[in-house]
Image (cartoon, rainbow, N blue to C red; front, side, top):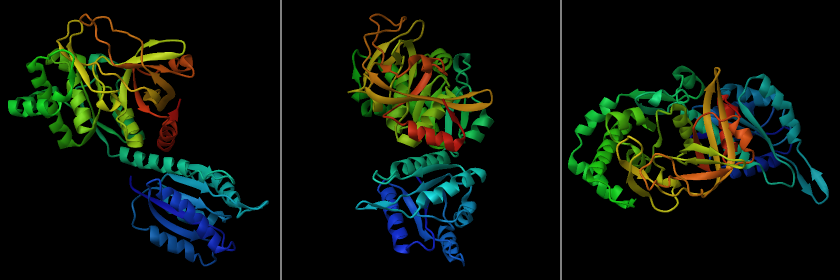
Length: 448
C-alpha cells in the first residue's frame, strides 16, 4: 500500500490547540491501522491563505493512493476545495470528526456543519469519495476510513496487474470470456495470453533433477491416499517449473490454463497438481478453464484481503444453502489439515493427481465480477461454510472420491441464484463486503 495524504481542517477562529488535538487523535488511529500517512494540519481559512499554501507545499512531490479530508470543525468550503482540486484524481474520504461531552454539557466545533457543506460540493465536482462521520459517545469510525483508503490502494495497484492465460476459451464457454478494452478501462487489469506450445517448449528443457527437486521439496509433503505414478509426479513438477518461469519473467499475479481442451486433451495431463504448486509455492491466484473474470475477481480479493481468493464451483442448490466444490484442487491456504491427494480418473480423461483435502469452514464472502450489456457488476453475498454431507460427482472411477467442498448456508438462496453469474465464484474468509464494495465504488462497478 502506498502513501495516503491526511489533511486536517478547522476554522481560523476555533482554538488551534483543539483542532490539532482532534486531528492528531484521528491521525493516530489511522497509523495504528498500518497506513503510511503524509499529514498536514491544521489547515484554516486564514485570509492570506498561508495554511493552504503551506499544505500544498508539504503535499507536493508525493505519489498518493488516496486523500483523507479530515474535518475537525467548521471550515468554509473554499479552503478545502483549493487543496482537493489539486488531487481530484484521487479517491478521497470526507471524514467529519465530532464534539465531546464535558459532564452533562455537549461541546462541538461544528464538524458536521463543515462536512454537510462539503458533501454535495464533492459530488458536484465529480470527486470519487466516501463520506464518514463520527458520533459522540461511539468509537471513531477509523475502520471505515482505513478500509476505503486500502481499497483505493488496491484500485491503483490493479492498473498495473497482469494475468497470464495459457490458451483461450476452454470448452468454448461463454461465461469465462472477457472484453479486453473495457476491462482495462474499468478495472485496469491486463490479461495476456500465451500458447500452450510455449509451456511445452519450456517443459522440454526442464531436467529430471529439477523435477525431482520439486517432488522432494514440495510434493513429498502431500498425503497420498494411494501411491501415484512417478511419471505423473514428474510431469506435474516439470510443467510447474515451465509455467513458473513464465510467471517470474512476465510478472503475472494470477494465472489460468486451458484445462479440459488443453492440458487434458492435448498433453494428456490433468493440471490439478500444477495449480496446487503455483498457488502454494509461488503465491499466485489460480483458476482453471481460462476463467478470465474469475481470475480478475481473485486478484481484487487478494489485493484487498491478502487471501488467495480460491474458486469453488456450484454443484447443487438447496432451500437454505448451496453445495460448492472443485473437481481438481484447492490451495493449501483454505485446506483444513494436511493437503491430501490421490490418483483418480474422470470419464475418458487420463488419470491425474486429484486433491481431496477438506476445506476450512466458517464465515465467508462469495463474489464474482461480471460483464453484461456493456457494464461491470460485482455479485456478492456472505454465508457460513459448513462441512458438506458425503457426496460424489458421477463419472469418477469407483470408489468415487469425496471432492473438496463446502455447503454454504446463505441468507436467501433464491435471491442469490436468481442473480448467479457463472459456475465459478471466489471465496474469502470473513465478511469482506465493505472492502469489496469500497473498491467497486472507486472503480465505478455496481454491486448486486
